[in-house]
Length: 371
Image 1: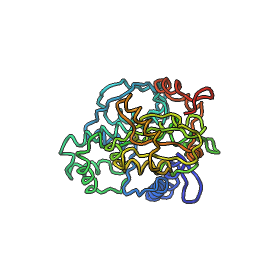
Image 2 (image 1 turned 60 degrees about the vertical axis):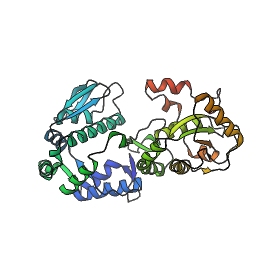
Image 3 (image 1 turned 90 degrees about the vertical axis):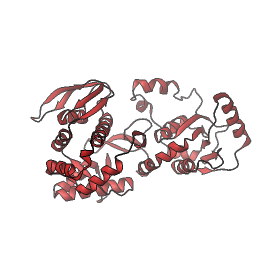
Image 4 (image 1 turned 180 degrees about the vertical axis):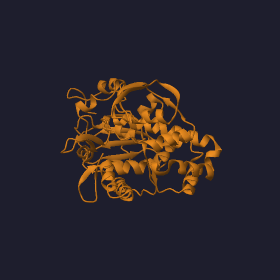
């Protein structure tokens, strides 16, 4: 990912770490923490940087991990220590991994079966972190100071972190009872519904960069992850309508909102296509305030009162047929159309076949309603 450094220039984010590392270990840590803080508009209190050797040692020290591999693949070009390559592969299903195997699963870049992207690799790494959590908290002995201290000593120079043994122990105790439904993840990719898009530096290096030219939306997405529990609890259903002549705006905005954790009830054209500003109508009488607040921020919209009669009648008709009705009706205006970057046809064509079947069938074109 491309990020702005404090010198005002843009670099790949791992390059910024290396720039500081040339001078000292501490400077590399300082550079990367400051850059991520600026990128996400968030305070980074703790960090951990683990070498490949440290990763293997840690997995072996806790007795290996059990991972449910969702999709098998073969990578014909996995790098070896002697600068050659070898063929590696994984079958789908549950399997126990030692440190070396887990590292291969986390690092593989050239797998088939849609596992050859950086984003597939990121998802595999999240699976490994989840498996580590499950293994650590399965045995109470791993939550005592002596065991954690032994792990810290074992890893030694393989890990860079500002966490002390006691802080690590406290975090472990805090998260011990965290269940899967309380964990929220964000994987950054260049899919058609993403806020990022691929590009190249002047030197030809492949990068990710924000579609809207800045990282404001990305920062907001990370901040919203801490409010995802409120969204899930309110479980609000959102109907999205296109009040502009921009083709596909309602559909792709719905896809984007769903990615952020909103529940989409429907998407379609508004009664007219002359809305200048994006407006939200609340059909809950103020009973789902957190969702309304976040929607207003995300879409830079305003909440209007009262709800027009035709929208009330529309929602009642939908409720009669679907046995439910939306909680909010969002009508997208030209202001949103100017900010929101629609995907290109070639971007849509890169999604997986399973997703493409549905998406391409409803893809708006000049011969279809603009939605």
